[in-house]
Length: 210
Image (cartoon, rainbow, N blue to C red; front, top):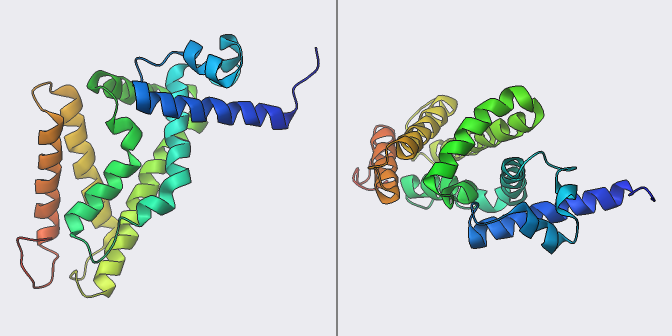
């Protein structure tokens, strides 16, 4: 049997991720099988596992590549003319768009698998962590632009971006593990916390609108 060239391997890998991402969006993670993905790509189901150990790994990788591919588009949401809280929320929720469409139990499972990945697949885990650090860095740059425009008081942008991001992750974790919290309530809680955090750093203007 002839060997597959590296170019062909790269094409198949990209196709697996592209098809999977579309299926995860259209049908949901649970309703997407590796058999469905393989059929659409035009390969045997077993071939998928030559590229990815599991469907969870496909999801992790598709999240990463989607983020990297669209990070410039997401950055456009961090507009200094916009409501600050809404701009930050739009940026974070867009960058986490695949995750936010998942059922709660799958999101919780991803959190667990992400922790396990640190030991089993440190390279892929580093990619996941890089998305968080990249998000914080973009928020930090956004805060810096606000400060330059004299909208924000003097503040350590790095520390404030970390506080903002941590607050979002905290509410996300509560949502994952407390079944009584609805997604709408989680979003409301995030907005209230971001308003509270940002309030002390806004110069002048209407303190009720950020």
